[in-house]
Length: 52
Image (cartoon, rainbow, N blue to C red; front, side, top):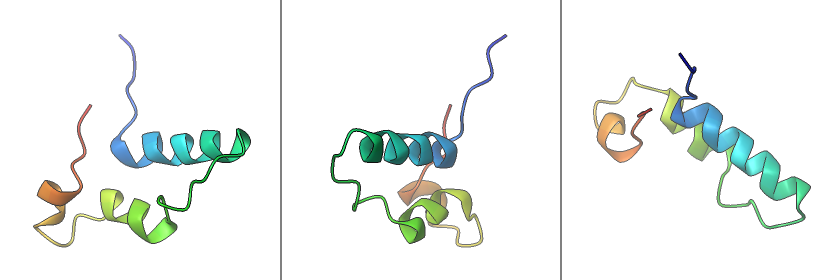
């Protein structure tokens, strides 16, 4: 059974890939990415979903 990445790790790797290709990854700031990992605010589960 394959193991899937959560949204935080997938976006972190996507940002790294953009940087490696010399493209603009400024949209994916650390603050933005941490909202996908942080579940302290109930609205984050709708605004920043964590789906497989």
